[in-house]
Amino acid sequence: MDMWPRPPNRLVFARRNARPLSLAGLRGSPILGTVTGPGQAAPELVACEGAVLGSSDPTRRWALRFPDGTERFAGVSRIEGFAVAEALAGVAEPDRVLVRVTLPVVLSDGAGPHLVDADGRLVLALGAHPRIAGTSVAMGEAAPAHAIGLVERAGDGPLWRWVARAQVAPADRVTALDALDAAADRAAAAR
Image (cartoon, rainbow, N blue to C red; front, side, top):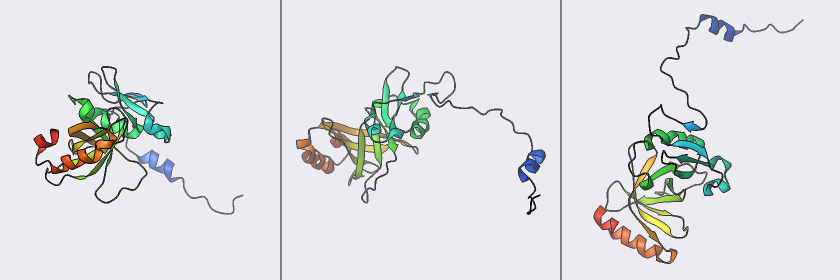
C-alpha cells in the first residue's frame, strides 16, 4: 500500500475532454528529401560528408541538392537547410546567394553574421559599408583566393546575396578591401 496519495492522472482527464484534432491542410516533411509540395522546384536536403564546415562539427554535414543535380551550401546544419530550402526554390541565381549560419563563436562589435556561400565556404560580413546603405563588406576564407565583396540581406529571412564579389589572392586582400571601402556606390563596388 502506498503511503502517499496518488495525484489524479491529469493527462487522461485532458485527453477525454479534448476536442479532436484535424490534420487537414498539414504537410509533413521527411528528414531527407524535398521540403515543399509536389511540382515545386525546391532544393532537397542531403547528407554531405565532405562539407568543410562539417570536418569539426558533425551537425554541419548537410547540403542542398538543386533540381539540376548540383549540391550547394555544403556545411549548413539540417535545421538551417530546412529553413532556407523553400526560399531558394524561386532564386534565379543561386550562386550569388549566401545562407546565414549560426556558429558557436563570439564576433567583435559590428561583425557578422557568418554566411555560407554556394560553394560551401565560410564568409564573414565584416561590417556595414560606410557609404552604400544596406550593405556590408564581406570576406571569405582563402581557399585558394578570398571572396571579397559587398553583401546584403535578401528579404527578411536567412538569405543574403552578393552585390559585388571578386576572388582576391591573399597578398592583395588589404588593397581589395581598401578599394571596396572607397567605393561610393554599387557600380563602383562591382569594378
